Image 1: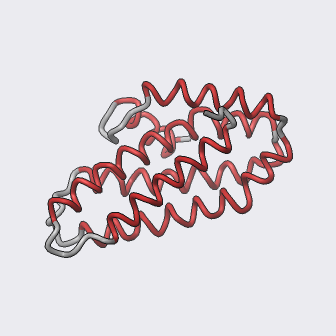
Image 2: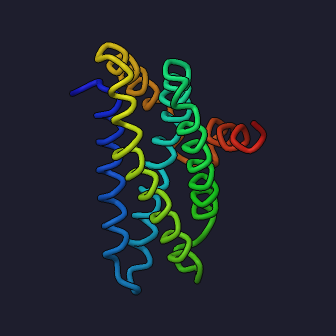
Amino acid sequence: MSTDAIVLLRDDHKEIRRLFREFAQTGEAAVAARGQIADKIIAALTVHTYIENETMYPEVRRLLPELEDDVLESYEEHHVADVLVSELAAMDADNERFVAKMTVLIENVTHHMDEEEQDWFPKVRAGLNRKQLSELGARMIEQKKSAPRSPAQPSALKKSIDAVIS
C-alpha cells in the first residue's frame, strides 16, 4: 500500500465517487437502500475531510505558501460539504428534501475532487518531494484510524466550528 498522500487522497476520491454512483442508481422506492448508502457517504466524507483539514491542508500551506489561496478555498468547500453532511445525517431518507440535498452535496464534492485532481494535486506534487508526500500519507493513514465517522462526533464538530470562526 502506498503512503503517498496524493495517491491516498485519490483512492478516497475513487471510493467516494463509487458511493455517489451507487446512490444515484437507487430507485425512488429504494428508501432504505438510499439511507444506507447515504450513511456510507457521510462516514467516508467525514473521515476524508477530517484528514485533509487536519494534516494535508495545514502542511501544504506551511510548506508551499504560494498555494495558500487554494488551501483556503478548499477549507471553504469542505465547510459547505460539512454543513450538508450534518443536515443529511439528521434527516430520514424518506424526507422530501433528502435526495435534493444529497444531489447538491454530490455536485459540490465532485467539483471539489475534480479541482483537486486536475489543478491542486499537480501543484502539490511539483512542490513536495517523495519523502514529504510519503510522510504526509503515513500521518493520514494513522489519523484515519481515529478520525470521526459521523459529523456529530466531537472532533468533527470541532472541525466544523473551527471552519466557521477562523
